[in-house]
Picture 1 (cartoon, rainbow, N blue to C red):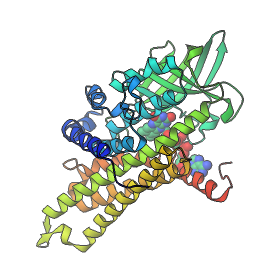
Picture 2 (picture 1 turned 90 degrees about the vertical axis):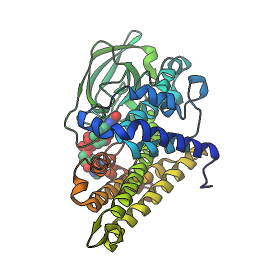
Picture 3 (picture 1 turned 60 degrees about the horizontal axis):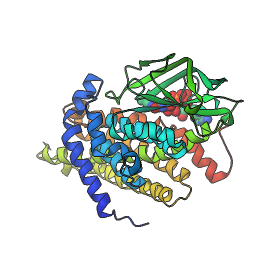
Amino acid sequence: MDLTLTPDQEAFRAAAREFCDREVVPHRTAWDHAESVDLAIVPKLGEQGFFGVKIPEEYGGLGLDLLTYCLAMEELGRADSAIRGIVSVSAGLFAGPILAHGTDAQKQRWLPGIVAGELLGCFGLTEPGHGSDAANLRTKAVRDGEDWVIDGEKIFITNGTWADACLVFARTGGPGPKGVSAFIVPTDTPGFERREVTGKLGLRGQATAALSFSGVRVPADALLGEEGQGFRIAMSTLDTGRVGIAASCTGIIAGCLAATVEYTTQRDQFGKPIAAHQLVQDLIADMSVDADAARLLVWRAADLAMRGEPFSLAASKAKLFASEAAVRAANNAVQAFGGYGYVDDYPVAKYLRDARVMTLYEGTSQIQKLLIGRAETGVSAFV
Ligand code: FAD
């Protein structure tokens, strides 16, 4: 693997960083306090190309590669994970599977709007009773003539209160993963209701919703892919999603490192900058190594995927390492800032709150370990 970015990738990264420094960083604390980003940012993110990095030009996207998408996720993660989540869910978890599995009509209907930031999508897999064990989800879709009728509940759905459509995973057949199908459900369909999940530890600027489906009737062409393919669609979507989460965690680590270097070289204690104390350098050295290691795992997973090779295992390793390292780096950053790290005057307190969820969603750290353990041993510890 060549670890040198192409001039186009470098230019994309520089433009993404410049946009984030101008449009996101100055507002992130206020959005966090308000518990909502200003949604006027969404079309601006579209104009900058964030929603369309991997979507082909025929749907308005940039048609670039997964590594470039990861660069976007790293820059957004460094700036504000709430904004990153809006993009990664709408572009990655909603538009991604439509691009991979959708009909021409489904692509034409949803992709241009998502790319432009005129529409937002969400991904409805998790249920109140089935999180890690998503293969046993209970939301049901029953065939009624030409239509499907959906009943059930989803929880913790990013973008859920803002989204124009939700990719809903529902049971159409027997128990287990083979009985699950995926449906594209417009959120103005009668019987669909949503409420905001409040009081989150982090990602406060981002909408997170509980969704309820009560006799939600959608036409046959709302089905994405084949009946019974839904769980496979969800899992392959999450493979790529995990690479993106790992990239955004790399951004958190890089942000913590930059903020900590700046602060510790300027603040004096015991007659010299705190950066000159060896135990403070210990914290900084760990962040620096974690940033490199996380980025290399991300690039390796992206490289495998771009070459069309299996990359699920590499994605799990990247997600596991980078998410744990992001929590570690943000915790170290707060330590290096002392009391000032515990308040909102600097970004590190928010980095710590935002990082914490990264070890939970898109498969907890325990679930990533079970996936890695299964690949290493050939023995599944899931059941
Ligand atoms: P559980 O599955 O109940 O797990 C609880 C604990 O048990 C964890 O520590 C877990 O690792 C452990 N555990 C479970 N099974 C095992 C096992 N077999 N072996 C060892 N340990 C085990 N979901 C979506 O579908 N779409 C979204 O957009 C989305 N966004 C989210 C945003 C936020 C802010 C949050 C908090 C969650 C979001 N989620 C979303 C849900 C998220 O993916 C789930 O919370 C996650 O998968 C864990 O499920 P759970 O919360 O039900 O925990």
